[in-house]
Length: 246
Image (cartoon, rainbow, N blue to C red; front, side):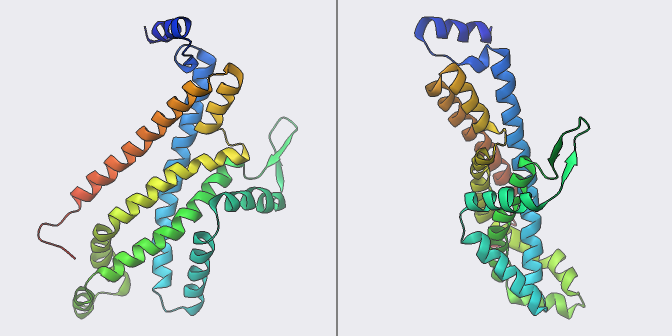
């Protein structure tokens, strides 16, 4: 029924949404959508872990560790993500050895999708580290002192007291950064990763339906971001403590 409707729409009005009635275009579009979702899920998880690790090392006693985190944050915050992605893919990737694919050909050790995940995770992780640092600094020092007086170690105090409160404080800023990360995944197009924008551009270059595919692309990203915002809002409401206003 859906295919028949869009076929009629194309015949009657020239609105060619080929992904709804052409199996080949539909398969390419769905593969691009899945690749985008996969990059988003892995990058979001890795960036949050990197942010937590960065803020933990930055708050430690090691001067070298604090300096390393500072350099990492400043480098990834002050350079364009497209330049970072190109650097990893062309400069770092070119130094790595190749491996056989089982058919006699040599392929890179890390593919385009892998480099996209690495670059985007490091980029968002630098911002997450600063977001978590601001959240931790907003936790009242009296709570930390109370935990120390009860014999909590730094790790126990961080896991049981500081981080649960800091998460509640920094969730709005974290939400904004993760939304930005989802939108930044379109940069993977530049290194040939078959994500949503890449798939759409292949379709419109062959079918010549640029206007229709751009509308589909816009709606697809609006829905992806809407799902993420909804999940983060649910998480924020679930973690809210009645009466606690830092």
